Structures are given as structure tokens and as C-alpha cells.
Length: 322
Image (cartoon, one colour):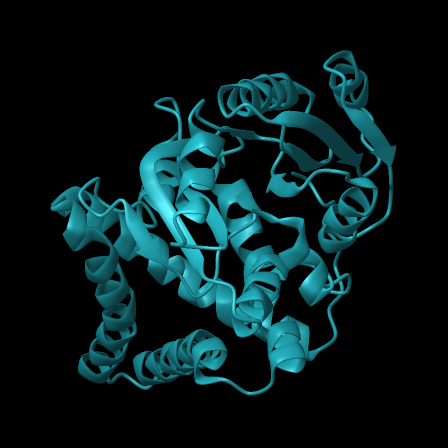
């Protein structure tokens, strides 16, 4: 019987970890795999570690490490032929492993992930933000340049070939890791014939903005590790232009040139609109387009602030929650 090791980084996820572990075990059983659960705890002060042990998981206590290091520590003790990474707030469908292993066996991909969706009770901004990455059911397979590590599946030989995750990145370690896999020749594939549910959705505006600020702080580190790249530079540069246009609009407003101020502000709205249309047209939902337009406008300005703070060596740390 083939075996799989499922590595789950965790920080204060007692409210989600039971659902995550039960779903993972059901998926492994449905695929006929011998399953090893490895929970790498980042210093939780709730009941998460105790709950994980009740489900037979090996719990590693690793406080103070960044998210890439947590995943590497879990992989270092893993014994499975297959290696999967999921976050502690993700509920995988029962056919998760069955479908993805068949795709790998057919030679279509080497590294695989499922699309994510939010539960029905998520607020509109969390639901819209997740739906922007969700493809229509008619496009159930998609070759990708990089994949997020909310759920990720591969043979362990691929993990070993690229040396695992970066242990210096606060965030963006998933993009860095899967870009290196792609550069090493691995074929990355995203599937959405069934989807994983993200129960750790942002429950408030403050939480959503805080997470985006944190995520956008990875651009400078990715540029340092991968070199200058238009793909990595385009969004930070676009966000800096947006800040510059905002400043010019304020100056024009103070100078009494209202027409110029309005023109400049409208120009800053165009990139978010383009991004919104690009991500929402496939859903044919005008409401989603408007929601994403506003969210992308906010994100664009958060990215500029995060990039400036990164240049100033801002090292605010966030716990490596799953």
C-alpha cells in the first residue's frame, strides 16, 4: 500500500483542526493510502495540539519559526511516498487524493492543488476575494506557474529536489517554493472538479486588510531571492504609481484644480477595474465585478504601503498560522 504524509502547520486553530483532520483521513482512506498526520505547532495556547493528538497526529512543538520552516520540519520527519501540505483551516473533499493521484499517474502533472472556496456563512468580501481565484466548472484543469500551499500534493522526491521551502520569507513562501519546482521541471496543475473549503476566512474588514498587508510584504523578499522579474515587479510598481497619483490628486485639490484632481483619482481606479474584469468575467456576475473592483483598489494601496515598509526594513512578524 502506498503511503502519504500530510503536513499541517498550526497556530491557535482549535476551532478548525478537528474538521481538517477528519477530512484528511477520509480522503486518504478513500484513496487507499496509508496516512501519516504531522501537525507542526507554532506555539499555540489553545487546545489545538491536544485535539490533533486525539486523532493520531504526530505533533511537533516548534514555536518562533516562520511558516516555511514549520513545513520543512514536518517534511523532515515524514515517511510517506507522497507528501501533502494543507493549512489547519482547510477542509479537503473526500475525493481529493483519489483525483489528484490519478492525474499524476496519467502523466498530466507532478505537483497538484485544488481550488479553494469559502463556506456559505463567510462575509461578502471574504467570499468575493476567494471567488476571484475560482475557475468555472467547465475549466476543471489549469496549468499553473505557481500554486498556493493551502493544499499541495506531490511525491516527496520533488520536495527534496528543490530543498524544501525558504525559511527566511515571512510570506510568499508558497510562490517561491512552487516557482522553484516549476524551474526544476515539475508540471504544476490546479484542479477544481471538486474544491476545498477555507474555514479560516476573514471575518472582519480589519482582518482582511491585515492579511493583505502581510501578504504584500513578501514582494521585496521574492525579488531578492528570484532576481528582477517583471512578473514580480509589476504589482509593487503599479501600487507605487497609484500612491503617486493619489498624492498628485491631493495637491491638485489643494490648489483648486478640481477637474485635474478627479481625473487623477479616476486613473487610479482603472487598474483595479481591469483586474476585477479579468477575474470576474468568467463568472458572469456584475455584482462580483463591483465587489472585486473595490477590493482591488484597497489592495493596490495596501501593497504600496507594504512595499515601502519592506524597503525600510520593517520586520513586523505574524504567527505562522495554518
